[in-house]
Length: 507
Image (cartoon, rainbow, N blue to C red):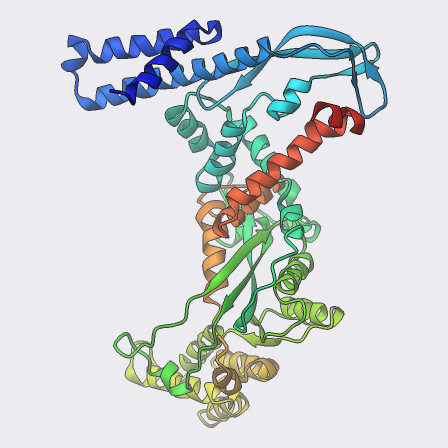
């Protein structure tokens, strides 16, 4: 009983506050209904649905009561000085503005300080850190998260179903773009990221195409799309999407212990003999369809430098064999005088081997599998040049035509061209990773699972915003980012409007 006394007293005091009368009436109505005979005949699901709707209304009234309570205690000031140095001496009291929240719409009443010919200032808006639009922080946060998981149409439905608020589709798209505005600044300001470890620092990048509206394609792709003839009016036919995509560059930086293996362990590995791989830690992944490939690769290097500014650790750069990507990486390493081991993904090498093997063997036979395993083992042993020469020689001996041996020559050329990045025997001895599974997974998660859905065509601003939010959430940084974003919003929307002396006075 003693524990209940303060609660009862607090409730009785609440009843005396005029601002909260509406909330207490709603609460009492809830209790009366739940104790009624009609409610006792309902299924629990109906009670849940009632509580969700009526409970949101109770919370809305409580928030409204709080805002009204603050409004009654806002004291008029003699003047408020803006960043423009102009003193606003006229105080217009009880100026309302609407605020859409997760509980429903409320009204914020506050004082406006005015000077003819100059914009008004609202100190209460600064205290509450209200946004420039009508949406609350809680609603903006949900609108930032939901479209990163599903379509904008589904976002509208989800918010309407799960909250007391509502945000139309167009406004949802605008809010997501605004929510992602501090992405670069957030990571640039995290300078103190040096890791106290001797584990490997791995940088990996890849690219994935996103189907865009024609006006948001890069110029060369846009020109190619303009020349293309469509087979169907209502949709793109197979092969026609090639000139409808804008490439997004995906990057990841993470830490992992060295993991020494032998070529034999990799080629002959199976689930029964697999050794448990070491865990990946401090993984950050991100992507951009707006910025160039060179810019994203530069960002990846800068992220690595923040973690290991003195380059005390072994750096590994994992990539596929895409020529322009490799050139950008090598150029960035040289420009920043960085030492790193660049490795071409072994899985991509195996894909070339399988295509070459089909020139000699039928599919789904033991012979083709044994041939690929044998050549794969030699490549892992650092003999990629020998493998290239051997398959060319066999194609010549067997008299394969130019067309029939095309995959053999392609594979051999690949092995020759990238031989400096295929020194797997050395990489395995040092415990370096040789496969790009992390970045492949990042491409699927960041792009395919959301931006690659069937029938979707993206505008550049929306696609970039979604990529940023998905990147932040995938890296486990969303809560920290949102606090950073709110601070920046306060500066943009409020503190930048006031004179510094005025801010000190307000504080």
